[in-house]
Length: 311
Image 1 (cartoon, rainbow, N blue to C red):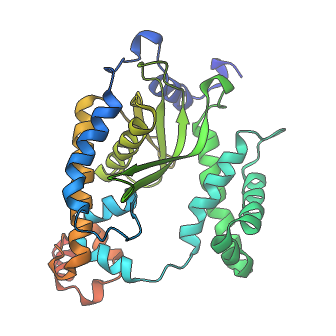
Image 2 (tube, rainbow, N blue to C red):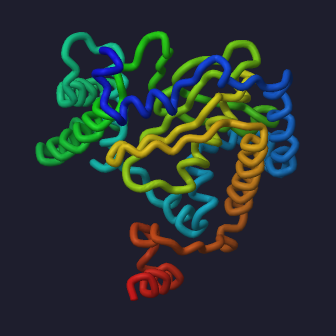
């Protein structure tokens, strides 16, 4: 496929995510060590009160996003037993299908990828596999249709990912901190490129649907911190690609961005630990998400906010 075969959006993606050699920033020696030292200095007094024989505290992007939002909603969701639903499963199925597309031989058909993803997840993922095995024909049909929509959108927006771009789907990131008492973990939808020495070259990409939100940038900044801790060199750029609109929200990684994200992570962990001890101190922050909150029926603050919003 030549550049002439690419759609305008595909060409824009190549321009936004790609870089010439002169556009790749070099970070100072010891950047990764400095980020780790700053993060552990902030986190050490927070995790110190935790029992030494306790299992490590695991924190991911959803925990941080939730705790920086409405703390009441976070606690309510934590209290709910986990159960797979079609909306929850469609993202996992779509991401698996997109992962399969990287090495797929022959014509790449979205529904064929989705069907193969469902079959593999049904056989390999324990809890999700059980959900897929027990799902009704109607639920499976809905799941396949919605996942197919996402996969088709990805294939339309992204050009074929070349081997030299070093694409990796569902890249796992993890950092053990404070003598392994705290684990930060995440999974990036797509990574492209690589670092060379102290020169940043990797791009972290997340796929989203719906409209842009500040939390989407925060998610990728969290991943940037984890990548910096892992490699010692930060990624070059972060990008959120909105599959249903073709919008690309990208920003370059700087030392200032990493500093801000480290503070956000530490503040979030502090609130997580504090609320575990004193849940009655939860701060309610009403917003549009109140409409889908599991505690809305008993939350006067959320009801009042929605009443004002709908007035």
